[in-house]
Length: 557
Ligand code: PEP
Ligand code: MG
Image 1 (cartoon, rainbow, N blue to C red):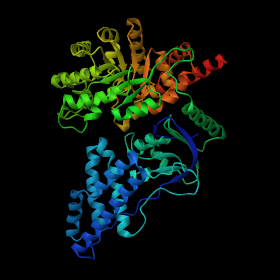
Image 2 (cartoon, rainbow, N blue to C red):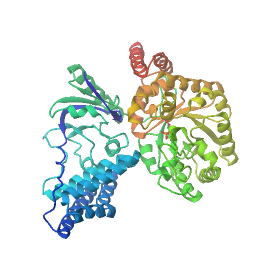
Image 3 (spheres, helix red, strand yellow):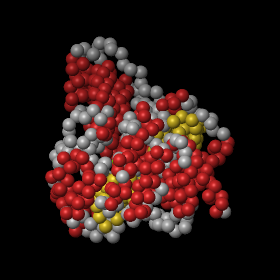
Image 4 (cartoon, rainbow, N blue to C red):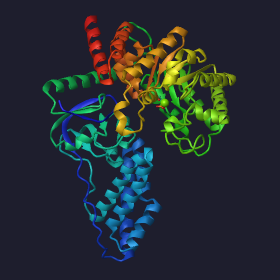
C-alpha cells in the first residue's frame, strides 16, 4: 500500500476515484500590445471588474465563511496598488494579459516572502490573476472538474472561489499538493467537514480515475489500496458516521470515570457550535486571537465585553481563559514587535506579559469584571511558563485581582520536568502539546521541512506528560490537555492513561474522542499508555497503542 504523506485536516476517511483540477492557463507571453495604452487599460479594468463581481456573486451564493473569503478576494482583485502596477506595465507598451500576470506575480512573491498567514494568501492572488487572464482571453477560468460521478479532488491548492461552490454530494475528499493547515482549503474543509489532506506533494503523480483512500487522521493518501484496506476504510467511515450521530453524553471512560470534554475557542462566536457539539465547557480560550490585527493593546472595556459574551454561553460551566500568548506564530505588535531570529525562543507568552505588566493587569481586570457579571466557573492561565518563579508570579497576580482559579500552561519541557514545584504554586496545569512537542523535539512547528518531528506521539513528549500527570495526582491538582493531541481519539486515551483529567479540543473532534473513550476503562488507558511510552519513536508508539487497544478490547469481550 504505497502512501503519499501530507497534513490531515480532521479525522475523516474516504475513498474513491481521483479527478484532478484542470491545469492552469498557459502563462501570457511578453508581446507588445496592439492596442493603445488607454484601450488596453480599460480592457483590463473591465475584466478585473467582471471578475470581482463574479467572485462577490459566488460568495453571495455560498454564504458563511466562504462569503467573507470571496469578498476578500474580490477586494484583492480591485486593490488600487495592483491596478497601478498593471497600468505601469501597460504604459510601457505591454499587453494586458502579461501586465496582469507580471504585476500579480510580483505582489504574490512579496506575500510569500512575508510567509505565515499572508504567505498562504498567495494562492488566492494567483487565482484572481488566472480569472482575469481567462476573462481577457474569453476562455473559462480553470476550476473544479465534473467527471459525472463522485470523486476525490486533487488540486495544487484550492482557490476559495472553487472551495466555496464545491458540490459536497460529488466531492468525497480533497487532496492538495501545496498549502498548509492554515490555507483556505484547510479552513473551509474544517468548516464543511470535508475529509482533506493538504500539502501532499506526491499527489501530483495521481491520474484521473485511479482509486485512493484519503485518511485525514493519519495524514496520508493510500494509492492502489487492497480490497482489505478498502473494506477497513469503509468500516472506519461508518464508525465515524455512527459516532457523529451518537447521543451526546458527558465525556467518560467505559468504567464511568468522568473525563470532561471541553472546547478550544478563539472567539466567543464559536461558543454556540461548541455547546451544540456537547462541549462541557471551554478548556482553552485563546484571547490573543481577538486582537491579532490590533496595533494597540485592547481596552479593558473591549475585553470585558468579549469575555462576558464567552462566559454567558457557559453558565455554571468551567471556562479556562488563557491570557495573551503573543509571539512566534501569533505576533501581537503591541506586546513585542522587536525582530527576533528565533521568535519561538524569544520574548513570548508570559515573558512578554511580564515585560508589559500593565497589559497583563488590564487583562486580569477585564476578566475579573466579566467573572463578576456572569455565572460561569472562570479559570485563568498563563502561556509559555518555563520556571516556578513565573508560575508563582502569574498565579499571585491573578489572585490579587480576585481570580479564584489560577494556573499555568505546561508547554516548555522545563515546566514539565519541575511539574511538582510548578503545580505547588498553581491551582491547575493545562498541557499545550503543540508547543511542548515543538520544544521537546527542537523543531519549529511552523516549518514544513521539520514537520515530521512535530508528532505528540513521540515517547519523549509522552514521558513529560506523564511527569505532569503524576505530579497533579500527588498534589490533587487537575491536569488538562489543550493541544491538538487531545483531538486524536486514541492519543486521547493515552493522555488519560498518563494522568490527564480533562481534554480540550476543536469542537468538531468531540464526537470521535467521546466515542473512543467509551471503549476503554481507566485500567485499559493505563496499559495503552504504557505500551506507547515504551516505544522508541512516534510511529512505533502509535502502533503499540493500537495493538494494546485492540488487545484490551478483545479481552473485554
Ligand atoms: C499548544 O501549544 O499546544 C497550545 C494549545 O497553544 P497554542 O497552540 O495556542 O500555542
Ligand atoms: Mg502553545
